[in-house]
Image: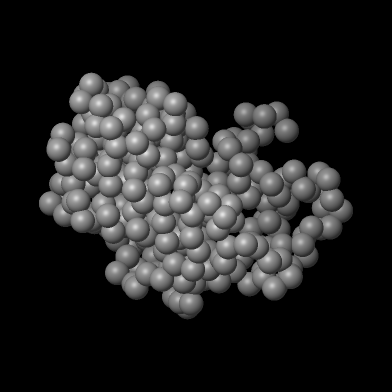
Length: 290
């Protein structure tokens, strides 16, 4: 199987690159904006016409949640319109498609983990652009394709909450972190492995939606506190309400995802977020020496 991966320099794309050598039976083709601009329909059409592959993992995304509030056209181009071009090309060339979406499609008012069938109601430009992409993909309906929503993604690669906290821990004696937003951290390496395991099993005639996040949940404060404990960081973490940390984009107060469907349909086991965090921090140390 030959697999195209867009967004190769993001957290998930980077994890897939690191994972590729463990799957010699697959051939991976990794692209970035320079080698494949997914926002240009002709570029997508030409790429599909001149390259042969069996599956596409779409990691290309506009992910700056706050900046999207000031750049709605760009967020829409990458997260919404581009997915239409990719889905259309996948349908025409009979290519499987796994697209990565987000917990931000929900409004955060739930009190129990979100099911794939729960009503969506994004509260930010970013969330709306991702939902519009989902809806467009379903409208085009490339066969053997799925949407995977994930949350609180982090990795040893790229910029993310874990790296930010570790950096602040070295610079500040006291760190204030929001303690009234609840979600599930997701180690991008776990998600990458799940995606590769899922690919051969795709056989649906319509686009299905699944949720993937590490099991369990925590607040951002609890997440940061656990990072500090595991890394023996001297800095102190103190909880604050969201009202004391205003941001341009509204965050969901509750974004825990129910992952029963993806685990049962594809027979995969998702590790707890604390276990994956520890593994991530060990890997970070091995990678950076810090």
